[in-house]
Length: 73
Image 1 (cartoon, one colour):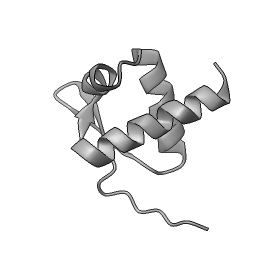
Image 2 (cartoon, helix red, strand yellow; image 1 turned 90 degrees about the vertical axis):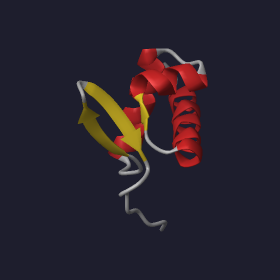
Image 3 (tube, one colour; image 1 turned 45 degrees about the vertical axis):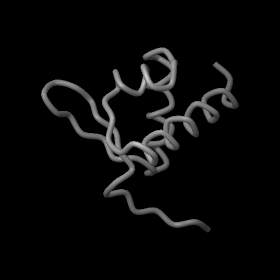
Image 4 (cartoon, one colour; image 1 turned 120 degrees about the vertical axis):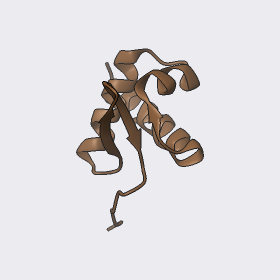
């Protein structure tokens, strides 16, 4: 998969989390019309950049941008 596509999907994931708050992987796939693989890779990208918070609840992975501190520059 191209880095450009991964970055584009990461932007989609970040925007929907910013708009709707915490979502499960399942809901992210549904909301964005992306495959589980595409969402997982995008989440990995964002997690590596410390731009999202991940937690496991009831056996499912949830992502949010709350509780994330990052700065520009």
